[in-house]
Length: 212
Image 1 (tube, one colour):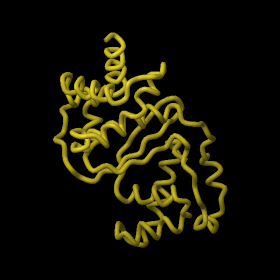
Image 2: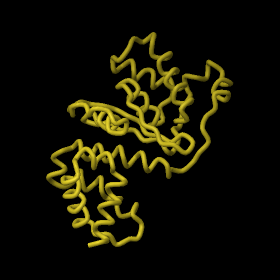
Image 3: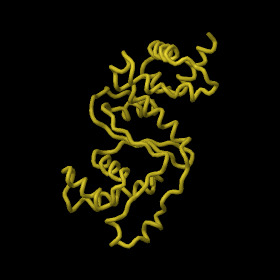
């Protein structure tokens, strides 16, 4: 019994925003259902909670409330990015030294800690309200996008627009600068004359935030 309570408490600590969202009673029921389905056979709490997101997404009644799995995904990513592999970030100086005529063929790699999410609910807004202790917005079924990453020893998350999300996905797949610009234009998100400047500004922002 003591071990069960310890595991429930560990889940509540790790997924505190989800616990607040559900309330004590509902979260307790969720935690107990998860522990029954995945009894702890390891010493590490982090290993014990590893299947938690999958449990929410694959098992009723929780899978019928997709926003619960999405919120858990965001929380897990914020924790996991702190343990992601390290890698040098691209410097402004290095980018500035690249001749302008070489930009169309430039490709970029995101830092290993970076995670991208396309949610079907306004999950970032809900998470942000709890963290900042502000009134919770109404839960809305709407396509939203966000990115999680680590800068120094701190995890960060921000919402991004559809155009930013498209550029991010294109870069993640190995597309070069010119192809990213073309994809943004083809999607009808902005005028052709604006795309190169827009994508260049995105790269500058991501570089300054240590995503690249």
